[in-house]
Length: 212
Image (cartoon, rainbow, N blue to C red):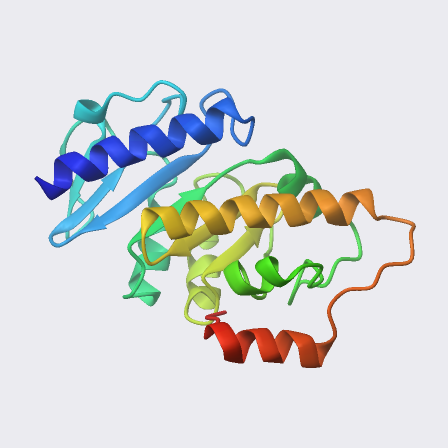
């Protein structure tokens, strides 16, 4: 059954992210789109110890209909899904290096990270910064919604990334690439760097049909 497999995939990939320190405690959440709703990790749960049977089930209206109560940040997921009909999954983490970059002064809010590697361009593209709102503030969902039509990945100020993908694997890979690029960016602070040129970025976008 497809839903059973997706539940198992969420548990497996969430544990992988947790075991590698990309999320911790009860932070972070994952969702997957179904034909008639969504699966989401439950509120207050550790991504290192999820039970597939207790993963939250929401209907097409976002109403909780099964499993434990969904993540408190479900509204971030539904806001992005509403603008990205091709998205099959969303990952939101509080990964250390991505959060660190989101706290820096003077970063470009239209595109937070430079194109340091080809795989960052291919998997993330451009990364806008969403202004800070308190957790649970519905203005945060509206701010994500404003950017989601043009960007499958956004960085929440002083909070962390929200990344959509056509599949759960795609969303996880893009989130991992974002975190590694944030790590590189911080490691290179104060050094002269040589990011990819605009022409090189355009070539990658053309070759690999990159979606922003």
